[in-house]
Amino acid sequence: CFILFYRLCALSKELLTPGRGLTQGSQDPGKQGIFHIQEVSSFLLRDHVKAMEERKLLHSFLAKSQKELPPRRMKDSYIEVLLPLGSEPELREKYLTVQNTVRFGRILEDLDSLGVLVCYMHTKNDSLKMSPLSIVTALVDKIDMCKKSLSPEQDIKFSGHVSWVGKSSMEVKMQMFQLHGNEFCPVLDATFVMVARDAENKGPAFVNPLIPGNVEEEELFRQGELNKGKRIAFSSTSLLKMAPSAKERNTIHEMFLSTLDPKTISFQSRVLPPNAVWMESTKLKSLEVCHPQVFRNLFDGPFKLTIFCGERNIFNRIFGGFLMRKAYELAWATACNLGGSRSFVVAVDDIMFQKPVEIGSLLFLSSQVCFTQNNYIQVRVHSEVASLQNKEHMTTNVFHFTFMSEKEVPLVYPKTYGESMLYLDGQRHFSSMSVPVSLRKDYRVEP
Image (cartoon, rainbow, N blue to C red):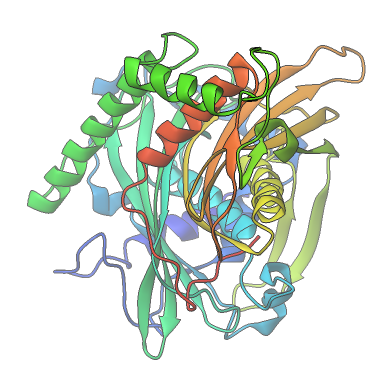
């Protein structure tokens, strides 16, 4: 039952040839040893009951301390996965938009799966030929888009490896490329933070230490440490914990004054400035019923695999990639609704997975534009669940997306103090974007 993982582990050794950098990946579209995207899905989305029975046998292989585990290098977890949209047209429909581009929500699902598989490679037990751990997504730290088009008629390749580890957490660096001519060109860079749990996902577990093998890897590891520090600093200055800065307070007060009706002498009479909308008018909402849906279909490729794909993972909870796709698609619709034209994703950051979503839950998604500047739109999606028996709502995720519209968009103005905090939080996330990109005709990524 673990033949597939054994094959993935064995193939991972073939992917790094001497002298090839981790961050570049293979540039040969015909290279053998690259995993098929459906192999990844098949491994991660197996039958729930059978998988959990198997995992109960793995508790004895868990380490009692990190010192017991052999160190790994970044090349040990490096893998490449092919999404053959060009060479296998039957896959294309799943990823196709009505504008004949690639659905970014589906790409988010694939990145989440890849991040999990990379961590399984890093933590595999050599005697077992597999990992005794459960891996869950804790945080999408950052996804930055490059100025490259995404065609549904050209193959896409993903690569990824562990770049930093703590005691039970791992940072995963991933890249996506698309075939142009005979070369795979960069499309996006992504950084995820994954957490190791015991075999049945009931408690934390130790992961193998990571030893950088060269100067490039030392820099990646150092950047991982810096990223951890930035996350701690960003969390400590959260508007849920600390008051806004003096500059931020002035910004909010100036916005408030600009909405006062000059015909009256009252703080209650508010009017919108030209080319502006109230923040509350930008909301969109959706509801998902979390079914235990898993599709099985035969992949008639060289490996003759039965493919599992759907909304549920082996722990009988909703797959994190599915949540990201649903949140992204609602955010994209929100951005398009405000801008009056198609919007294009620029960056994704700070997606925190706070609580798992159980099968049978009602999933409520609420999307809102919280900041705009020129043709940029910052959208926040709040996710919460409620069970049919208990109507209490609990927050599971908060998503942050940055979009770019084809034309300049209205300014958003908060009415309440709570909306003012959302505005400032959106401004902070927008300001943290690496480098604002310029919209070009060849840059098309849609839900």
